[in-house]
Image (cartoon, rainbow, N blue to C red):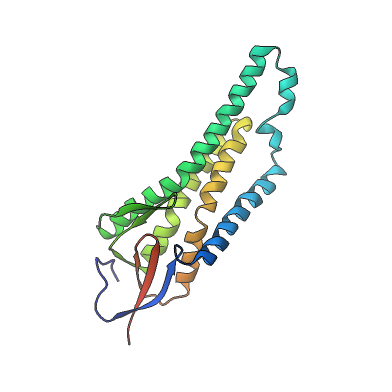
Length: 205
């Protein structure tokens, strides 16, 4: 079945997800995202100690005011990179989602905010396979790029890129949850994503 621009007649709702109204589920997904970040950080700390992110001993061996300022400047640069990266990841995921959705359906997406979170919505109706790809590919693409960067940067910048990667993957928790739910539904479902609300339809018998 191809992606469509509207739900055909004879289809009924089989499952829906609205994280804006279902605050309990949204809370659990946010907690899961936090667990992903903490878990990734703890796992990596066994291989790369956190002092590569900020080695406090360098303040005592900085060699005067200019040395101390250089250490502070590096620390602020790393902090700024982490903040910018963690803010950019969800935004880039939404933009990639919109581009992929338009490529799959030919329908121009719209963007909006739920609180501080950018979302993508579309009138298009996606097949099960197409929508699952749409859910998972943005984080996978960004994840592959960040992994490459992590392998290329000096060890002193490992944690900066790695924490951005953790944010990227944690931002995909809701997408992974939705994909897992959709996997269990019939193969011929159609899915419509209104941004804050996603609805799956199946042909009525």
